[in-house]
Length: 220
View 1 (tube, rainbow, N blue to C red):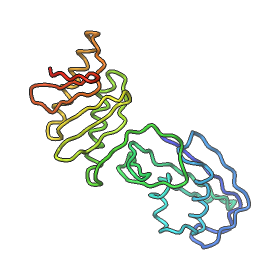
View 2: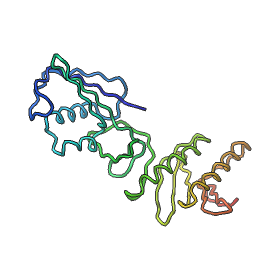
View 3: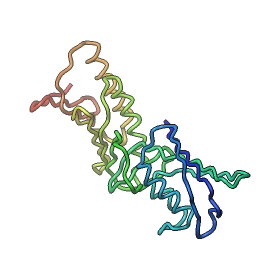
């Protein structure tokens, strides 16, 4: 999924390397829906060209939704600017996101509502749990559920929650094996038509699965 923002800057009389850029008019064309607030992105681009950003020039790519800026100057002195946005795949704390490239960004200026799973962990654990998100979501797709959050609870204990508030508990060491057991459980329920109102599924046992049905718990 790619979002494209194209900005035509007319009568740009100075190049982007100079301190002052005179802009007489800006024509904007959006080919697809964007993630960010458009006016904020436009302001960030102009500030970037005018060297007015308060942070290091390269930090625009970590402090905004801007991922790539490509500029082409035409013979009539018009500057064609193509901007691509970061594609987030998970949200973190403090307004941060992980992108498809594995970068952690803290964009300012707001964004549209994003339906992303949240990772709760130490910074050095984010990428590991990112892989777990994809693997678990593939299993939840069998019953049409979406992963809401995944958390490193410490001591190798992982807890996840889906859109139906079902809690899943795993051991990191045996995560893939436990996913296989979860898949078998879901397929059994779907094939048998016997779907309980399960509130949590604990897969940390080697030869059993603990299931919580409202205020009751049972093992299979």
